[in-house]
Amino acid sequence: MAKRKTLQSLEESVFTESNLAAMAKDLKSRRFALDRTTISDDLVTGLRAIITKDGNVTYHASYHLGDQRPFLKLGVMDPKAADHISLDDARELTKTIKALAAKGIDPQDGLHRRLIKELKERGTRWRP
Image (cartoon, rainbow, N blue to C red; front, side, top):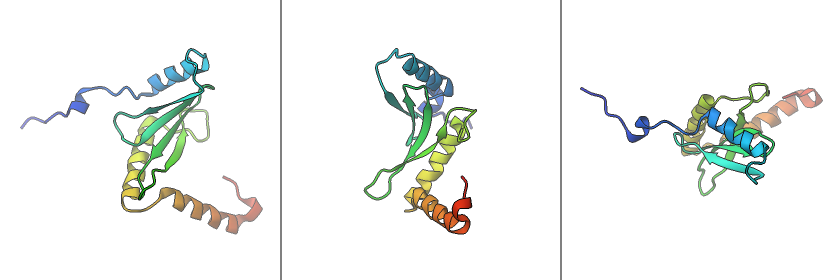
């Protein structure tokens, strides 16, 4: 039996690291008179990249939680940065975050509780 191909699998994504890097280069060179732009992933709903005029690209995941639509910064598209994340990892994390939110769990709530717990345990010795 032949595999069925979806329309999306027939097309290549335009949301690639190379395209995002090219857009960052254009914003940094002031080719476009924008301070920043946001581009949504065409494969994973909720994933977006925010590109600033400084040439920085950050990945963010948005999700639905009740009537709210919060977003969570996942990391940056800079291999030299401590919070670097690949596009593939950002896509997988976005899927996980959205699945948790669909169950009524706010991923950011867990982050806050963990931080408070660590601050109580380590005090001024706490480090990220």
